[in-house]
Length: 186
Image (tube, rainbow, N blue to C red; front, side, top):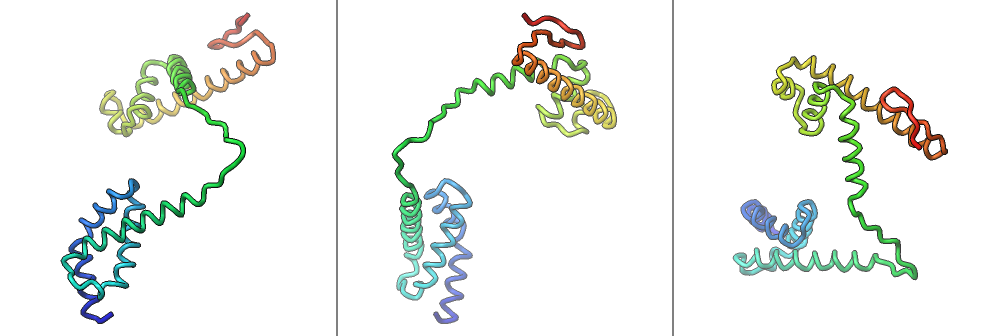
């Protein structure tokens, strides 16, 4: 390819790259795959640039190359599928585990003092920064950090305690701890 045609191709790509990337993103849902698709199409088009007589049709040519490339990728992926005699177990997420985790979290937060609970919720649930949490609660950033440290340690301790209690129940021991006191779970 002549030097002038290389420069012409580079100028074309520079001016049309945004529109071409939008076309690629319409063809494949993942933005990274769209960039790969466009790059592959540009490489293929570069080799044939001198054969495109009417450069005003270059967009249409490139779009056709992208469509053909996407089809090739789809077919190659499809060939990787291997039939089997036995279907894998299909698990359906009903959300019960997520609801159970959320219920446990809400229950466990009750062991914290109100100030500790507020710091934990704002820092981890609302994802506020230390400074934002301090401003919202009217305390210093250092107080937020130390309160959060003590609250998380208390939550870990409570989770470990509950885990031990569950293991004891599974073994048949019906005496469990509850907030530092023992009681019969029968």
